[in-house]
Image 1 (cartoon, helix red, strand yellow):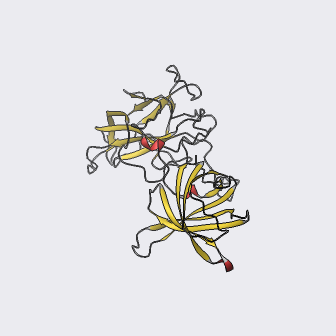
Image 2: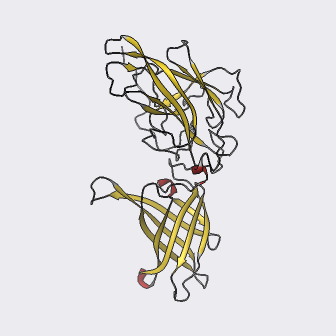
Image 3: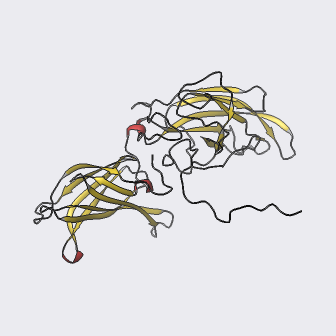
Length: 342
């Protein structure tokens, strides 16, 4: 019998998952191992266990559900039909003793109930549908199958299946999560409220975003209203520590001098992972493309579509070099292919 042959010899190209459950810019591997905000649900659940020979027993674990704030930039997306705040929803299974290797608890069947179309209104009469749970964010088909061993305490992210005939959940809105150790056998229901952040519950929802590759784009606005600002975020191997990559922002600003002629301001500088702003020594291009000190610029990414730059010029700049100061706002002109910041 002939072997079944596929139709494509090439891998996919970078693109945002059309069935994504949260902004791809919200999180990267690894997922956190403890909540940083309100705990939405926490329940002791009895899971079935197996040893290497298939012998069954039980183990009590703690299942916790919480959310992480995302950019809240107001985009209408596959996971959001109101343009309001968005988040990523996480579920963690904690064993009391990860070192116990005699038996492993097995992953339960996890389903959700929200509504016929996963819309804003929670419908308690809607059927339960299976949820895709992955151990890494921003995946497309990665899944944790029912009855898989839970060797160590693990955090999972709630995702949607990338198939048209599966229900798409809006995890920002209220839903019920059903934890079923063995299909149909004494399930536990967790009521998950809608995501409504406040300054006290989710301060990150109102804070600037950490600087990373999602800030790399062409921006427009600023001093004249139509300045062009090109921001790049690079990384290089840290030869000093031999353990990490150093990151830096590189920017080129095309604005106008005092005579209305184009002039370039530019600079680059390092920043720490997780930093929400960075201040960079800034230069202008002089005769022979020499780099002449101009002052400094502080970049802050308010959300995915808004970048603030605070300029501080040096005193005594020669005419017609511009000497503007203050904070100016820039809007994103486009997103990078496959690097969708929302």
